[in-house]
Image 1 (cartoon, rainbow, N blue to C red):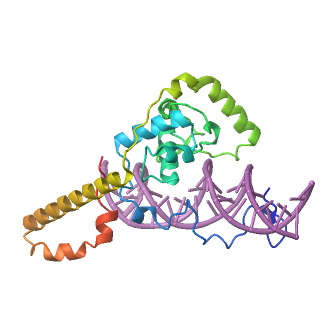
Image 2 (image 1 turned 45 degrees about the vertical axis):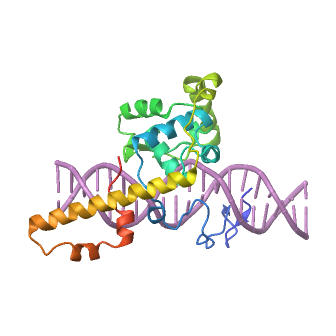
Image 3 (image 1 turned 90 degrees about the vertical axis):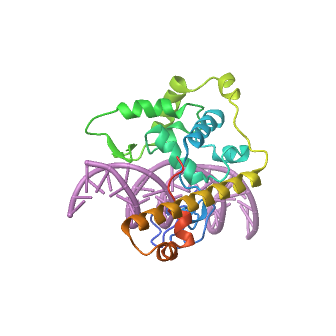
Length: 217
DNA sequence: CTACTGACAACGGGCGTCGG
DNA sequence: CCGACGCCCGTTGTCAGTAG
């Protein structure tokens, strides 16, 4: 409905400016600081791909319910979906059971002065798409790319039997990576002939170890 | 040094819910 | 019934890290 008005009473808003500092479900204070694994492995990407085909693009709640990607937030999944699709706007695929890689392949080949990319994703440069236009494209994509119900119903997703065990495994993996990082830093110090470990260990705070660890993939 | 990439932060629209 | 409120999620901005 969005009937909230600005102080001027001119522009309708869904939410008054100023309340934005309230933390919302999708507004993690810092995903980077809170998640063990901010990056995506190839395996996780494939799981997300299957989940999108199974539940439809943008049905994040169902994907989360399925527990096939424990630890991933909606924001992370949304961003990864944009990468797979090769475009930033996902509205025209909302709810469709499609293979995002098919769209990504097509988008990767698009060229021209009107094509603007950010992180290899095509971004919208023109005016915001009208509802009608989105609906039209949605129908077009549905007719062209959507899998049959039998196909997407047959897609099986991995489901961890014990989510806590999975988190524990992630912790263990993180510790192994930390240890490896320590070893590498020690080697660098040795090669440089610096006074060893102590200094560099102290420089490396816990937070940094958690957040700036190398990607798993 | 500069351009590019990859990741999170934040904004704002849409829409469902609820109370008067 | 209608308007206010608040949640969900798409979009865009920003910035640190990295490659050339």
